[in-house]
Length: 276
Image (cartoon, rainbow, N blue to C red; front, side):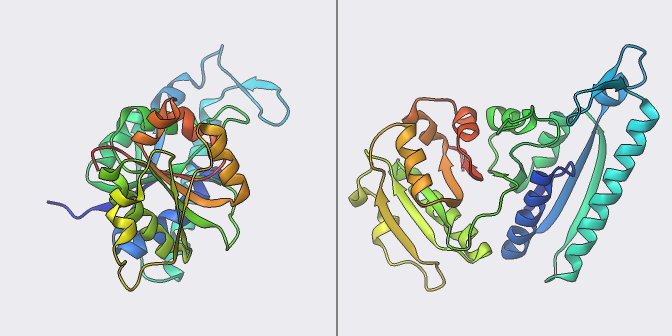
């Protein structure tokens, strides 16, 4: 069986670059290989050059012909920028990495590359997302159709005081959520904030009462003050999170699909599927 690895999906958007930094820290902490995946969308390439094809500038809103040669040159520049960025990681603590560039359907290639990955890391919204969207099309499809552990990152940088927040509901998944939060906290030199959903009973959560390992980051425990999504928003506004770790049961507790919950929250998200 192949060794697990950290897979990061890149498209040179600011959120994607932030995701790369987080993926590199995670791979170093886990002593795993970092695999960077750059997918050249075959449908996008096929549509370029048609007489009716147009692209619209995000800044000016002006339409212009969608030229195939210009698109291919743009993709080549993006690949070069990614290679340069990855090479710069070698100047930091040791990191094994490789860049895979593939052409084809985006989601299908990502699903294939994610087989065997311990983590899949990507920006919450890349260049292809609608303007102002908090969750891009690719990220939404991965949340809705895959069972892998996802780290959906954002461009913004949290303050050094911000903790990794673990949202706790069901006893059977609390251990995995806390351990994931601790892992990320160690990788980023932060504390952990365990946030209990109203129905969670601390007495049924051994991970909170048992003595943690000596190298565990500091952890605080509190109960969410109220029910519903607005209570969670208030808690994250009161003490902004560096990232929020939650599982599929959390979406059920708030009564909305997981992808909509992730899109609604203005913070990096670590999604733990029920099968982990």
